[in-house]
Amino acid sequence: MQHPYLMFLGDVPDQLGAKTAQGIVDWRPEWCLGQMRLPGCQADLGIKDITIKEAAENGTKTMVIGIVNSGGFLPPHWIDSIIEAMEAGMDIASGLHIRLSSIPELKQAADRLSRKLFDVRHPSEDVPTGKGTPRSGKRLLAVGTDCSVGKMYTTLAIEKEMKARDIKCDFRATGQTGIFIAGTGISIDAVVADFISGAVEVLSPENDADHWDIIEGQGSLFHPSFAGVSLGLLHGAQADALVLCHEPTRAHMRGIPHKQLPDLKECMALNLTTARLTNKDAKFVGISINTSGLSVEEGDKLLQDLEKEHGLPCVDAYRTGVASIVDAL
Image 1 (tube, rainbow, N blue to C red):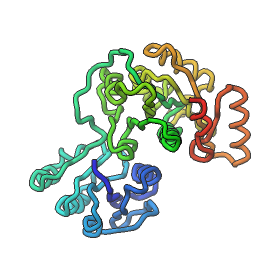
Image 2: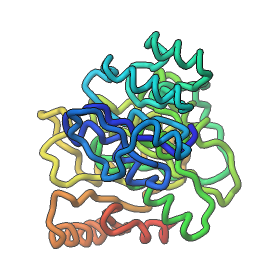
Image 3: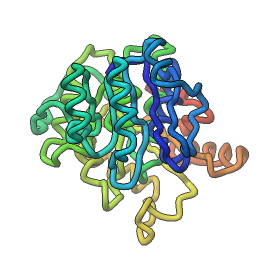
């Protein structure tokens, strides 16, 4: 996908519906030329509202459909705007479950205009099964006590800190928002189960001995819905370093009211056991806590207490930064 991006929000009813677009704006603001909203849209990315014509005149390469909705469908009344963007010279990218190419009007317009349709949720290449063969280079993987606890933000923050120190590294995206931010990647939740670990091996191939791949994590080994994806990531990454991500105010696993979050020590132990199937030297190098649900004083105390308890750097990647974790690397 080429940038700059035009962020298309349609008429989503709330800010949460634009969370994919918001993640892109948070981490790649220089790529986001502006936003386009239809009447009734209740989301706002805090960037300039522009028309398709204005976006094209200012060099936009790709319109990003940066929304999420229940069912992953594309509302029919958005189609005219998307075709207009293609007629103005833009490719189209979407993180929805529905494939753009499965919508006849969009497929016909793309063929007629020689535009590309990027369905980032769906792998565009065949991947092999994982082999667990040792490969050069270094890899870090974020793991979690639950889903949506900050694994993407933590790995992006680590990449940013490492690049600021001129350390050779690349963020490896494994979800649709991360793919938009990186411009490439594989959405692991859309890979057939037998090929998950192989997809991660493809995503983080052999590299220079001092190069780090910073791999975005997904789900949790303890979440009944997503543990399979988390396990495949652990085996395919062959991670040298793990960072545990946690949200301390959760009353239960997301979407599973009867399932409690695991103890941090229990979570770290199981992740190490499974990671060491393909890298016997895997170890934890830090803990990343989302303290947004706590006061600053409560958050600081929790970080200090956990650092003392576990003997590892403990940070809030968004609020305090990740310098101490990169120091540990």
